[in-house]
Image (tube, chains in turn blue, yellow):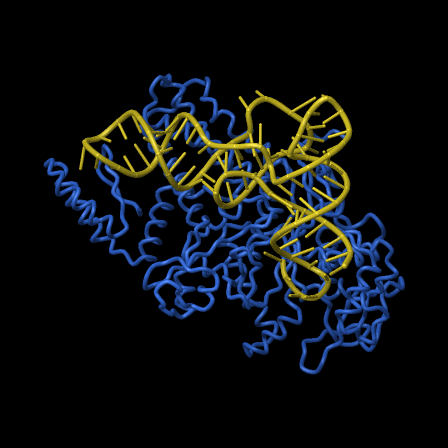
Length: 532
RNA sequence: GGCGGCAUAGCCAAGAGGCUAAGGCGACGGUCUGCAAAACCGUUAUCCCCGGUUCGAGUCCGGGUGCCGCCUCCA
């Protein structure tokens, strides 16, 4: 054992219910399996968060020196896909491919790394059938009329992840679910489903059919990461039954102690305090939101809260007539209690605002403005010749940031560690009074270099500042229908008035611009405008 | 009903028993500015309630209250 010791990272493991130090199976390496999408529709923010959690984890582990193998599956054979394909009048495989493409488009947009391997169910029928076969051989599964079910009672540790007992579950299941007479027990779940006429089917020892929902993850994780691997991630709602069943399948086939060694589950996203759902009309696709805000803003926003916590997404809709902010009930009915106007829900939906995203957007703009200023400063002079002290907050930034990340990927804390350095740099750029010239230069250099590492870990703050800020302005202008040419004109006219010290005219023009929602900032090198 | 989680300032949100409870937004005061804005500086909490463990608890234990999730497809 001569490997260099990698830094200690702790993560919360759902199975043990505690934070545990990451000790990979093979020192220095780490296998990560993320439960990917079932591709039957466009993604929503919950999907985005579920992909973001392993994304940042993988980026950070790599930054810390781990050799990571990142696997995320695509479930492209599933009941929901079949149902949706019928609606859209496509072949199931075609529909799955369409939405897999859309998934990738959204995830690319949000800056997610592509996994090293992205196995699809349709490409893994053999290992899936083999796994089912071995469970049948061990009496852990039984065939019935072309279906194959897992015999839950035969797997002793069942319930260990979700912390329930079989008896408790039986009480619930018996009263709530219609029991399929072919099952020995209501808790037994399908490993293989016989095909009904017209459904996609693959040959198997039990007849033509398709895999059940849970088996693919057991089969594909062991195919690409081995029977035992390090980290398994997914949304909280997958703990039961999906992940519980995966454990039963994998450990049933491969023995105790196999399969995932750490379980990481992310919290939910709520809209206005309620779980998002289509029936409530509070369901927004990723795309609807990235049409309004920069995808990086969305990414950043998701990182402001620890991944295990729930994240509430505030919605704000105003009455188009009187501009009053509408309460929940009013939003749903479209009727404004203030002025009595009734607005089509569709119209309200189109002009909903997301205060949380706006705050994140402003914050991102602040970061990029600071980076832009720092870059301009560095372009002006020669690099610092000799090493030497760097201002306090900037000097400690990266260490503090990483310490938070090592503590269960605490992005919220890590982000907080950037605030003081950011302010320090802006202060330095403003005046630099009382600071040695060399130290000033070194501090800004250090800041820019370390911030680039932060950017690599988070997948945020890495764009070219000027480009990002320009795009943001364009996006906002388009959203409010602002005529930017006219704004430029007014700004120029005002600048002329200022130069001739005609402040009355300048102030009048400022007021006019303010009426358009535009704020003008006067600086030494002229005036620039932003949104108020 | 069963199981699990959460409750920290006006709002959002960190905080694996012990320096003066991070940070952001907002607000207020200040520096700068023709006026502003931006930027910077400063102010803005004893952690839901009751009991307990401990030299010491936001952090552990018990009870209560209130939210939320899972138990059926769900990220």
